Length: 115
Length: 114
Image 1 (spheres, one colour):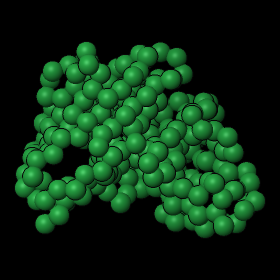
Image 2 (tube, one colour):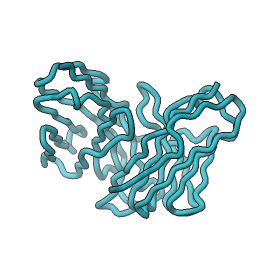
Image 3 (cartoon, chains in turn yellow, orange):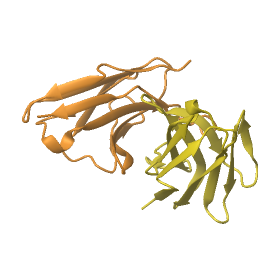
């Protein structure tokens, strides 16, 4: 059974801090790892990581995948109150069979950024 | 922009009622998914569909059924709602393509079963 574990489960920081969110996984047939941000509505897509060691970056957010150690990190620098959200990590299996396209999610990390 | 629309944001039902949750996507996606989200448990897959009239059980299908009569619409059915089905329900859709297999989510339906 595929498994995704995120840590920490919750985190409280002040504006301007840098945070690192962790995601480890055990997947039979790994293809990609995805990060989503969820405020009080639909999860919105942040990154898809398929190759080890290649950093994906979008503004103050960045993420990297380590396929040997089976984990990914999401970094947020100079945090703002608008970064407060639940951050979800999910893994996508490789093509083939009816499991294709099915994501397995971690529990999520609740990030609270205080002014 | 991809749009996934869920018919209700909030729903209150009584135990034993039959409940329909509707989801429509406007991007011609092949795959559609239903999840429930509970504190501390993340998103858990109930059912998914990769084509019209096709459905596959997810991790927690018990007590639920689904219907996909048209490509753009995927319905989740609670045949006889129970209090342990009180939850946030999220619908998602994605392309079948390997390179573009990103799921896009609706805003969610918060269901309370009394």
